[in-house]
Image (cartoon, rainbow, N blue to C red; front, side):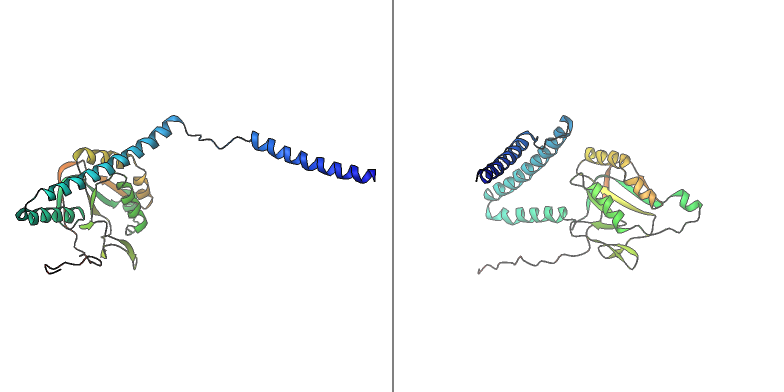
Length: 239
């Protein structure tokens, strides 16, 4: 009988000891810490503040547009709506645009020409990568081989040919035009592309980027792909 009690007592002590060990381990295990240094945290904070500032700017612009509508007379309402529509068409790329920017020539590398390599079309993956690098700076507009690139554009490889908006992109050499909101924005993007690894990625495909210096006036042609309205309907006067 005494041995049976001792066995139960030993089992209880083992359970209690195991639970105490788990509690001690959980109390002494350090929580996951943010190991980033101060500069990394400051950079992250700066990015978030920039996004916040851009959103506030967009909200302020919409509020100003709404306020201008409330102050208009009936005679001026149609004109104001047309101006807003033209602005939206321009932002969407449906109208030609002129602004500060630069031109990039995509051409075969001198080494590939010297060795007699066949010039291959630019791949859709590399062009998409390039566009992502450009879009790190907001507000830039593109024209790729005389084809306007907008939010409605698409990039595909069709039968081994690179296409933008369903139109074939020329085998290099061809030009890419970039227009920025201001000349300062254009210079920032220009310097970023010069120091970016994107040039090395093109060189691996036997291509080089020749980037001209920013100028005050670069013209992009309008989007020619058309627009399909799926949801908006015109309201008649009777309605």
